[in-house]
Every structure is written in C-alpha cells, then in structure tokens.
Length: 350
Image (cartoon, rainbow, N blue to C red; front, side, top):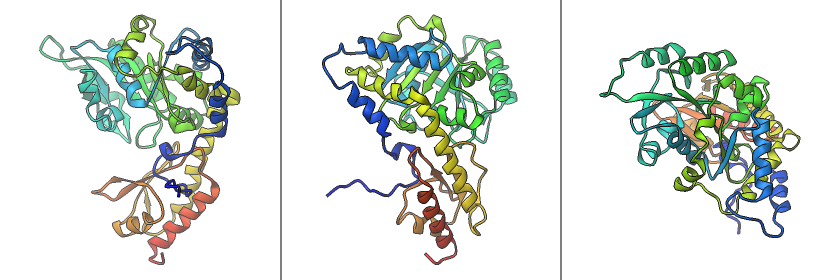
C-alpha cells in the first residue's frame, strides 16, 4: 500500500510533484556513461544555458543539492572571517538553516530592519552607518530573499535602491532565490531583467520549489569570486557525482520557459485562493498574495478542523497566522475544494 497521499495540500511547494517534462529530461540523459562531477559536455552546456538565461553568459554556475547548500556556499565565497552578511529578520539564512551559516560558513549575520519580509532601505542605511573598526564585524554582503518568506516581492525600485546602497558601501549582493521564478513572474520580468534589477553578485537560483526533483544552482556573477569556487563547492559537501542528472532538470526548466509556466500557474492559484477566502467570516487574510503564498489568521478550532484533511503550516502560533502555499501542480479544483472546507470550518458546519 502506498504511503504517499494523492490529495494535494497547501503546506509547501516542496511537497509538490516533479513536472513530467523534468522527469523526461532526466530519462533522456540516462543513457551511456559520462564524466562525473560536472566534467561532462552536457552539464557544461546547461551551465552556459542557465547563465545566458540570467543575462550573463560569463557567470559561474555551480549546481548544488539544495537551497541551504547554495546559501551557505555563497556566504563562504563572499565573506572573510571578520565580515558579516546583512539579512532580514525572516530570512531563511537567519531562521531556517539550523545555524548552518555560523557552523559551516563561520559567518556572522546582522539583522536589518524588516517590513513584510523586506529589508527597508533606510534601515539598511542606518545599519551601514555604524562606526566600524577592528573591534566590530564588518558588513560585506547584503542577502535579499526574492520572493520573501512572507510571500511578498521586492519591487524593481526597491531592489535598485538596496543594491546601489550596498555597493556604495562596498558590500556584495546575494539573492536567496528559492522562489526567484515566482518573483519574476509576479513582476512580469524575464530572469535576466530581475537579475539586473537586483544588482546581484551571487544568486541562489531555486528549482525544487518550481517543479524539479532535486537541485539548486549558485550563480556567481562577480568574476573575482570564480577562482576556488569548485573547491569550495566540494568542501561544502555540495558536489554531485552524477551531475548530468541535476543539469537535465534545469535544462527542462529552461526549455520553452517551463520555469515561467510553472511559476505563473502557482501564483495564479494563490490569487484564486485569496479571492475565494478573503470574504469568509473568521478568516483574516494578512495581505494580498504577491507570489504563490497566502497568509491568513484563523482560530485554533478552524485550523484543527482543516488539518484533518489538508496539510499546511502554522506560521505564528501566537497570532494564529497560517501559510497556504500553492505549487506548479495545484489545480483550480484543489483550490476550490480547500476554500469550501475553510468556509465550512469557519461557520462550524465542517
């Protein structure tokens, strides 16, 4: 008997299935032998293809196993031992990496003032204006999450203001782009246009939240960081031996802009869910969805009733805020059935 539930929930886009075209891409390269560790021509071709899609054919592309690995590898590449990364209060690096930046990268994190998951320009300016001498850690990297853990999205003007300020103070800019595709779709930008808007030096480009099975990519635009990256990736335990199978998934995402198709759909399902539940008494939607997440405050009783049949996360136990995440494979039927269940639970008829 299968232990995998057929019902699609709203816990995370990590819980979603793998896109059939991604599976087909893996199968297509499952023939013959190829050099391991990314030294095969096919993987190198996909690396160039991704770099070109991101607007810089000379960028270094380094496939890794997961987003945590990509983020920690970025910190290790960009920071010296006395330097620090500036992050938001809700950044995955700060709240969900179980101390990996500190334990693995030896990196100090500085938390910038944050609103709705986004670092504020004036708050960053104040932080960077503090005196710095040999007694204090030196900010050297600004890490932005796009889209954010709150489901919000930095606008183009915000990104340019933040990256300009960071570069003026000698900081590199890193983007945790686990949902970079969703942000690009939400802003109606190409990947290259969003990269340019971010002024990014290092990008953790997500795949698993957008239809692939396993793998992310750290893309390094700053040429001065390229030397030693292969060694750092290996030392950070992020070097896949059968790299062509990771590369094939990104090849599939790029083919006919599958990345965009998946992201647009996930975003649209979040908007549909928002529109379906926002008028239900007892459901207080936190904010309109910018990408593929809906946040709402519901009572503990309603939450308990819903969790009997649907998977989702409680975001804040104190306030009762929950997160409902839509994925590339979320259907209109999934959304409508869940919205009906929310309504039934809220009026006590469930």
